Image 1 (cartoon, rainbow, N blue to C red):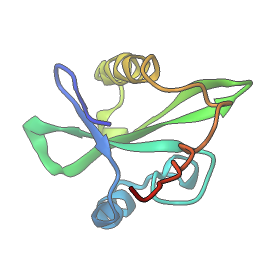
Image 2: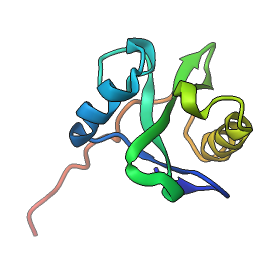
Image 3: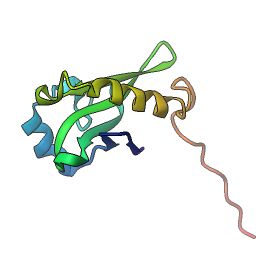
Image 4: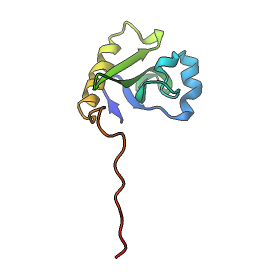
Length: 114
């Protein structure tokens, strides 16, 4: 899942992000690379400051059969109006996601030789 908003770029978290996540001080509950209840973990970046600096993280938590966004912004990026922008992007993504109470995997198709 990738999404670009006016000021931000949300993309999947990759193992190469570990050092930047640690440098940003991301709490364990919001760390998309650590085992927790955060599903579909994303990195929030600002293209205007460079792709290697993390502005925050985002993801979804399944609660009561519905997805709920979980957003964390690094202290330097708070109180700039960015939270609303991340939240709007997350709601856009959430509208496209399958029901969290549904199947967690796609059933394998049985192949037959011709």
